[in-house]
Length: 114
Picture (cartoon, rainbow, N blue to C red):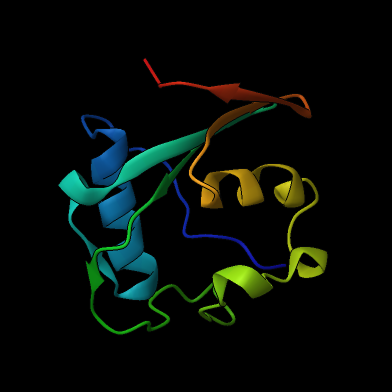
């Protein structure tokens, strides 16, 4: 299934620092942590924090041996049928510029993250 870049926060890291580190480790793409925008929290048995940016550098390259394929998709042609269930509930909202919190499959639009 297709998914975004992901991983875990290491001790002493901010969420943004973890995003930058995981992106480099997995894909070779470099993000400026000051250009990341938190746009979603997906809360189930754990919390997934989602960030977006339109500033990056580097070439998309598989750096993690557990990754089989990396690919860019046009925003208006995302393969929701090949993504994890539920992505179609929240991902279109953040791409429209909204901030969301999904708690146990219930979508909440929010104004800001505290």
